[in-house]
Length: 150
Image (cartoon, rainbow, N blue to C red):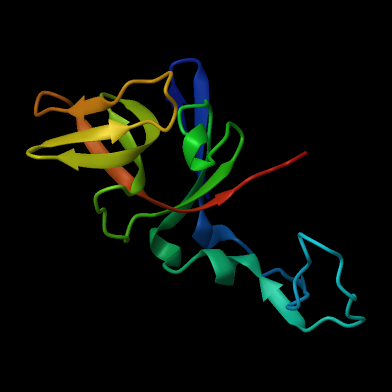
């Protein structure tokens, strides 16, 4: 199941985690050296399903693709896939998906005294103060970021 929402000239696509099939792929538990090469092991340790690794609450989890560069400082780039969990508690400094006046955004929640802000992680963007006049809704906490290098 997926839901498309029109956001000005962009389509945001939410993908439900409950519609995924089990896909176990080889998992080499020994890891790979990011420094000096280490001897490779000649066998696979087990099978790993990324759904088991990334999704703690399947009925409350969805995926959404990122458009834009406001979260570069948090390691979130345009084109990345976010794993968002609606059941996780929102705390100060959580990265969240929110809807403000009909527009979706991903930002860091910041509470300063009695005010709440959506804080970008890019100096080219300003924080957004959440006010009572706004139509504001939180859509969940970002649990994981899937980043593509190619």
